[in-house]
Amino acid sequence: MADITTALQICNLGLSYLKVPTVDSITSLVAPQKEVKTICAQWYDLSRQEALRAHPWNFARGTAKLAVSATAPLFGYDSKFPLPTDFLRLRFIGEDNYGLVGIDFDFESSDYILTSREVTEHNAITITGITAADPAVVTAAAHGLSNGDTILIEDVVGMTEVNDTRFLVADKTTDTFELTTEAGVDVDASAYTAYASGGTATQVDTLNIGYIKDVEDVTYFDPLFVTYLSLVFAKNICYGVTGKTTLRRDIREMLLEASIQARAINGQDNPPRRVTRSRVLGARRRYSGGSSEVTDPKYISFN
Image: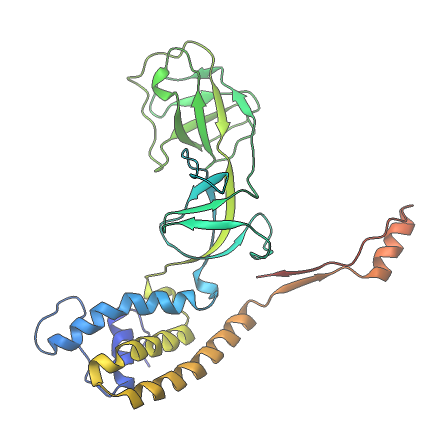
């Protein structure tokens, strides 16, 4: 079978399970088969997101470091963080992949995650210079920042245009870094007022998350996921296209089989790592090092 590289091909796979003729487009909703094309267009993205949310597929896993919003939640939580634009489902919060058990969080619409835990706090860094150039270069001795960090600049004398503004760190050296906007565009400070003195740069509090991405590019899909998605799609459009409830039940049975196989292979491709701390080996190490501290064994599963 030829490689599946488009949404249209997946839709036609779904239609084949229903024994319905294939369509030539799901974007141009005209004759022939205008009604079938319209139903396909209505249901494809919903079906794709349903299938992606159903399991932590390896190809859809992503991580992100979220910068805290300047606007605090109304109540209940200390901080809120804008979610990535391709966010679909949360997998874990924090540096280590311990899942979500015991983590206090919530969502504000589909744009923010709210939490009071796992926030990394940072000290202000003293600025000693900012060039009026394109891009602007900040001097701050031994600043310790990394490329991509989000910072807030405050209290600069002279070049006040940069005050109370968030920037991203770029092309950093030990004592300097360039400024870009949060969208990643170089900051042109050539027309700004000359830097005089003072100022601080504070790395914005961040939250590390793992999540499922809203993957739209079909070429990233695993072949077994393609089969699974085409059956999810067939299940969703079955009654609208055929009007047959018995056929929909048959599709659901096929979907269950495809789901079991796809999930099993997905897990085998990237099995969880279990770190086991042996009482015996741990005791040997402690006593050989002169320590008798007793620590219970830990079992850590990484998703």
